[in-house]
Length: 171
Image (cartoon, rainbow, N blue to C red; front, side, top):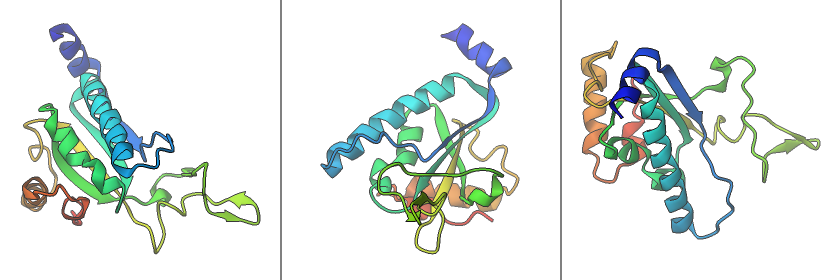
């Protein structure tokens, strides 16, 4: 509603972070699994937008590769008509003191102890953080101006909505 939008603009969150969204539903059918995750993320984007400050950002971190590319995260966000792609950045858990990503099923272990961060940040596995802003502000607040505008244009023009083109280094 209009009142809710005014409150969010005035008192909303500056940043909403969703690292490694996953339903953990165990559905083996890849397309059905991807569809369930797309549905969850679309609902998340609508909900997050409703409480995002005027100049706020939504950060979503996913692993590169399948099945995550099939979720089409950038397309879901921009498809709401509410959000635009601002930029992306490599995810490095060392940037967040105390952060430990752990899987519950099939997680890497050493001597019977779950190893944090190995399945999202290693020589074999890369992850990226996508940064979304209110539609129409995609490049407006960018510190890197033209370079990020070009990266954003590449991301939006990718017909397959591949994370690879969206995840080109923005630095």
